Image (cartoon, rainbow over all chains, first blue to last red; front, side, top):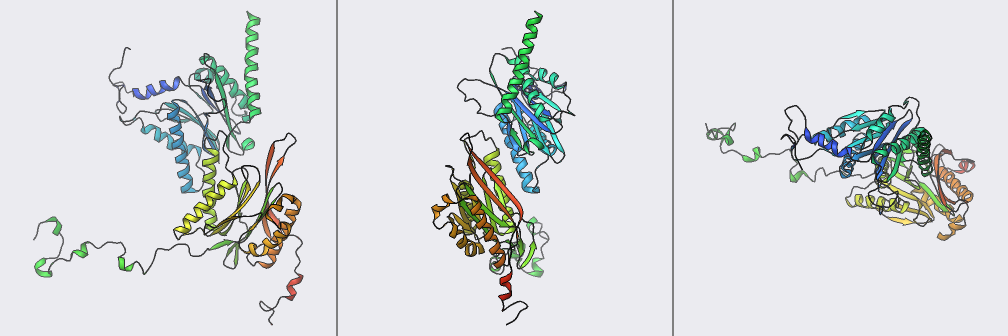
Length: 255
Length: 281
């Protein structure tokens, strides 16, 4: 394998002469090959969805969940190196618990994101560690309403209305840009999310996938982060595939 | 002058004699001989207290009740406390005794629920009443073994793995027992005999209808309000039922009623009471 490294790519905490940290950029590369994850912030809550790539037919369907819960009111989904993601979630749970044991009130989403941003950024500062190989999308509801954030290996944590990462992120992002976040409800967004993941799967078509969707809403889940009910998931999958069939028919008609 | 840094700032040896090193080693720690003067303090009595929790099994589940009063000694200090705590989907914990320790237990149980039910639960295991009871008994026994008890008596109600009703007690000593009729504190003297009229033998709960169980429990709350000076007539009541739906699947309903009132009070007996209060013998 030919290496075109310029000598500044073997260590964290070292800038290249043009001011880049290559290890962080390589971490982003690891993410770009992972299954697509998306998050949608609606007027009444947040929806998270992931395209779970099935690497073996021996895996039990419906198990090995990819969407996790940090605290009752906060959910997270990520693309990239899954063990890194699980470590990230574990740290998030620690932060949420410490906060609660100190202040006897659930942590707010922006505050948790500040803390996790600092944690992730620390892994870009020392040459004895490597940055996180995940981009995480975190959604939750607190006293200020719904929040959606995305954290990158560099430690940047920004708030979004719609966020996408992983292999199909470009397709997903262009679909997310079409949504009206002021009027969208979580119940509608579940279907939209299923459809977007289905479309984004075009970029990874050689492998099968399973759809996982969770939501947090005051009306639907009393402010708790939960997987959507089975019947709603089935309905969403049907909706996502129906539309695709229409497209294919249209294409056939045109040709 | 002695220039050794270890002797800086010390009184001149010729003038004041040999330096007393005990002064330099004086610590802000308590001296061993003083330890007995003021021992480390542990909980020796409850402060704000909640009185009896009363509960029983019936054929489809359990009912449990506790009033909303927090007493500061004999002063009825708070009248809006909730002493029945929901843990997971189908378990209730009723707590009597010290209210600050109740609040501590509430936080511990919330943490247990998060760890067992919220984190990565892709099915298979469920947090049920026997687990909650075992966990609480370990906490309470551990604390009493440190001579620093959580000053409570607790009743845990819910369902076993096999779907049968579960009702068990644990207290500040770590003592546990289970029964179809359970009460803490004053209730174990006043309410349990009334409950046992409905359920004479432990297994008889399978013949008891919910309405009858509820009626007896309401009566217990009334009798307790009459005779327990630390009881109030405002209370909460939890009913947990397991019902088989038409499709054959079991459905568990958790019903938490708040701000119930002790109905049909009759104070006729009061005129015959004498010997204290305003009416002297």
